[in-house]
Length: 275
Length: 287
Image (cartoon, rainbow over the protein chains, first blue to last red):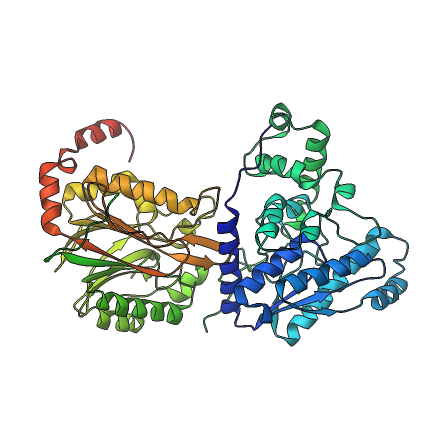
């Protein structure tokens, strides 16, 4: 079976560290704000940011909701301690309950989960405004390709250092950057409801799907070629279905072009102005 | 592979590997002037900057705002700096009748000595240059008081015929300005930088010409550039250790015009080029 090509993890980490340093410099802002979930993605993103701009310039927020596990908060604190980050806990249980009540979203796991992800986004961007800081994204390439994220929720950020990094390599970065082993080793979860895991929802885990996604997305192998390469049919069908179904999340907004100067279509300009 | 130490009478060429920012001309100009100071201190006669060094690479429609004419006052600090050290800088050049070229401008003695306009504008994968630039109309050596140089901009050098044509026309050295984006793989250096060194080494050896490769480093708009600026002579010997991949650096390398001429006399590969075979291959085909 075809594998995910290996990567020089140390070089990857060093280039991403410099990316975060440059983005902050170019933005003219003071630091990064990151939501620590207690998982490996946010831990790695925070570790890279701390290495890039100094731990004192990275504000970590732990954002528990009414159904968050105690483990997540404990692990978020462990990550902050390991990286020397100041961590603020903003308890979103009350606001989440109140908004769910107003919206009538109680009892709908997915609606409530998406709402939680978006409440965290609101909190992160609000806090970022006060620093002022960039919101550090924590999405990785595997979950972006599969669409395993909440639009304008956890997918919303100022910069995405891991957006082109396979989850397999995020684990490797975690070990390289000194993320606590309990965080690297535990099953990935969005922790939007009790007992939720990525693998439970997706139907497969990242070490299994990353090689398949690589050979489809980068290697150009279609379904038949993936099957011929030895990937299990159920895995191929589930992964390709998610890959196709959720592609709208790669480019979340479509602008109706009615002029010859449509932004990002007819006029593509550098993000940062001359200063 | 060894590195040649400068000898009396050699020219000294500095490769200014800088991290430019798109559309931030003041920032980029400051990087140029700092590199020129360092190069002067190192005894350089010529400083080669990367592709679009003054404007940054991923300008996109920013060329509308940031393209310069050769008489643009924003070039004055570089013209002044060129009074005692020649400079080869990259910039978007506003053409008189519309269109913008991706240009390399040779400054010497406070004047513009020559311009090379990029011939091959990559428009595939992550590249979109054909959308913003017009291709250069010609390929010919450019002469200044220091010598006669073949200038190539990035993709130009990926078409091996460019260097062959210049070497056949007679040049003292090839100067390559690059803005080479790169991805990472299992190697200990960026994949793009590794490819560049293969091309530069092969170009130097097969044209029997020293190659001075100035690449940029750093990030622009989420795109990583691979550095590793390097100089290699016509026999494949390093003229200086390559720059690191990720850091700004100044590579200082010797250029002996006498050694270049001697090597090319002993190994006259470029003058033996069978252009009749090119003509035959192209016979009956539309240009």
